[in-house]
Length: 263
Image 1: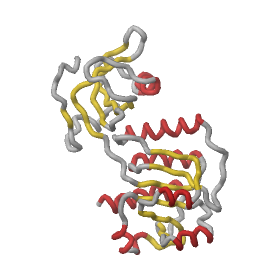
Image 2 (image 1 turned 120 degrees about the vertical axis):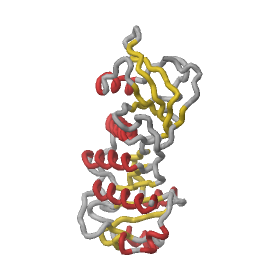
Image 3 (image 1 turned 120 degrees about the horizontal axis):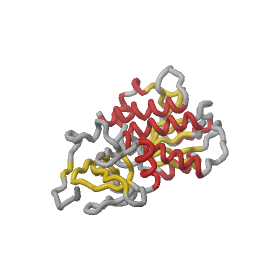
Image 4 (image 1 turned 30 degrees about the vertical axis):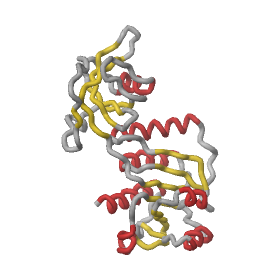
């Protein structure tokens, strides 16, 4: 069952060799050994046993640190009761995220987890929390919560065949700090008072990657913040007349913008 020096088979996105249908996918820390059996880290080992319940002969795709999935065979348990795996020659490139940074104020945990899961499935690059005039100021997230969110992002990335999870920064920064840091990005500001996307041909023509999407709090941007955007020649756009929750608006806007840019 070893690698045996066989020639590596690198599949493109049209030939997945079972990569999508019923495929088990797990993360692997570092580079997957090519010639000798190996074990998984604690997180992947626990999932392979308790969730996937892998057994000898099962096939699984492991995502390594380079963003590539490699098909591996489960060899069963070793003497220490750890599952062992052997790499095969089949590899598939993970789907790269689109260079879109979503910046928004902190929202409640349930909505935030929905946002993280769905933006990961859509395939954006990063979620950044910001401070605004009307945003709520929750207590800082602890290590346990941040670890849970990162596991959620990793699981969503694996489910979607992504090359890596969405990056997450939950430490809120100000609008000036964000725009000073992200000078290379095209900026889109979402606000209920803005013009609908569909009404602006110029907006669609000038839209380009990398992209920064600014989403205000449920109370909207303040007059001072709108003046700040105006001084920087940033225009406000909306999703139309429908009133949406922050997490729904975030996911909808990212999906809409990526559809325009990737078409």
